[in-house]
Image 1 (cartoon, one colour):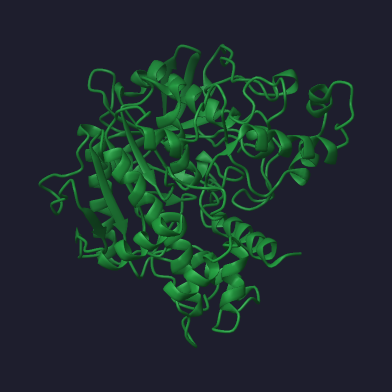
Image 2 (image 1 turned 45 degrees about the vertical axis):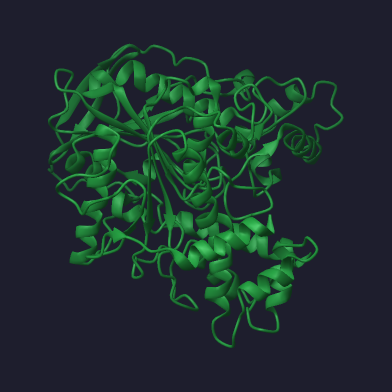
Length: 524
């Protein structure tokens, strides 16, 4: 196996390890004689749902927003959910969409997964609607679950309604095949179906259907970019939050999400069909629809990307953003100071040291074009003890920081944009064990400041709790007004990058990173 494939596989493995940090906690077991939490019922157009009331907020879990994509509906556009009679129980999580083991313990094979969760503050009611935040989870378009993101702090402190969405993943979400409508974009179509559900139904939960913010991180953040560029998403949301999912991602930068041409996606679909024994079938799609989910998961590639040159996504989001062909809504966009350190640490820990002797080969594995590796080694020299952090800086700058800066600049030319950098160098680790070097603020490390991942409160210091409160204030004020700035938090000037660190929330000077981004721009 080539060095590139070895390191990419290790990077994908680390993504799965990161996913375990947000794995849902098991539901608490009621003690003998204890009373269940008080229930609350909301009537939707499909039928009533009964959620659970908590201290200061309410939750409604596993609500169908589309019909189960099973049988003949596998690899079709999402269809409307069926009506139900009686009161539907919405007090426990639904199954995650099919995925290998990782974030979801043991994985999932349940295709009846087009569900969403709603978290509301106590005061939300139809007569006094609150802004709505729709959250799209990350996980490389192969893993992730709505139920991993406990949004009660955001809902209660920010006085907003939060909707977390499950959407089809992996080959079930992004398969492409000649003559198959929706090829390469079924997961994105699911997200749009969820947004249509929000426009139609969220008023009954006390949400303002006319004030919807679409937000996400990593693959979820990139999904927001895709929806900004999708003509079919017009009118479905009013603001956008993009965390560590830069719109200008590229397939040759393997750690950040990106899109691929439909032709590439179809080639991958043909490979999948051959692997599961359907490549020479008379009706390939009928054959594929009969294949067990576990075989599909075993045969699919570790990396998944949406396809462009499709009806839902006519252009690569990077090209659409560059050309100004996107929905004009306010955008809050950012990345983390040390995005690449988690992947670099995982690769080092797996037995691939980064030192002056190995550094040229490591770089060449990811940047094989003539002259690229040599230029990167000169720009990012490795000394005896700093190989891991330097490798992390290359990943972070090439895949996240510089593309985020590019995307922010392109968006800001046509719509209001606020940009942040999460920079808590002591952010709680998301992976077990002791890393080979300090990770700083790596990929996904901002998430515990906004959510209780897996329902488990993070062990934050008092200063980190203050940062978490400030971030929720910024995010939800943006959802309310389209401007995160306000009197309860440090000033956030619109045309600056706000650095988010405990007791140090200030516009940041980014001269070093501007220098590196100029380098990546020149490199092409």
